[in-house]
Image (cartoon, rainbow, N blue to C red):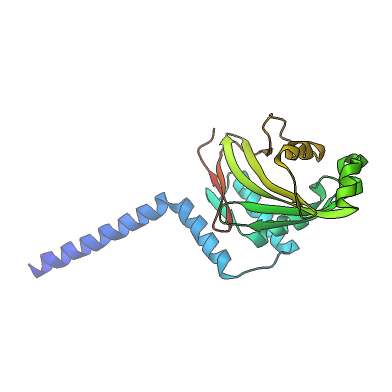
Length: 214
């Protein structure tokens, strides 16, 4: 009987090991993403060109369907991207972009060189209000509404410390080249791969998730 009990115990342990290995294989994508996030969170980094390079590779791999099906980015990673990788992509008149991640939204801000906005055709009223330069900010709510389209809801826009009325926001987006052209007010639409299923801000991190190809 002792021999039988020993065999059964060994078989039970082996079964548990097999189940754990099988579960780890099935959930390898989320586990790799979790481990990557945990490992990255262990050492806080300041925005830098090197961090932008590494973050850019992580983003490129995800968008090309490589690696984990879910990745996330902290504030330093996003700030590195906008400061070192995408700075030249800003519309004329915008400079010094900054990203702040909240619980479910992100705040984007940038310096305004008023004379360069709107291809040098800034209305006199806007120049009188803001002067030569000012800082603008907006709260952004990302979501994937349909395959291939990432929508940024634009809320609480301010410039020079003054709130911008909601009715003016679509016009400002259009004048700065950020209008989505879909007839929806206060949104910006961006093209993403069709298998990007979700983009959201959760507890101070921007999460991206892939689904089955559409």
